[in-house]
Amino acid sequence: MNEQLGETAGLVWRYLKENGETTIPKLTKNLNLDEFLVGTALGWLAREDKIDLYVKGRSKAAKLK
Image (cartoon, rainbow, N blue to C red):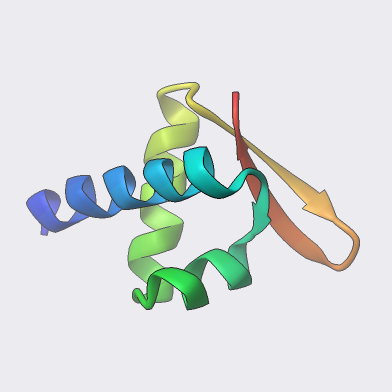
């Protein structure tokens, strides 16, 4: 599971680099990944201070720092 989590964190980071800020539901849908994995990867990236997580309207969103 840890290896899959690391791979997912890399996919999330690359997606944000290429597409800019996005909502979490859109990110999950566009990457076609499990919501739990995406959420855990976002937590990992936030803990490493690589992304900002925030509320955008009625959704939660992420962007690279």
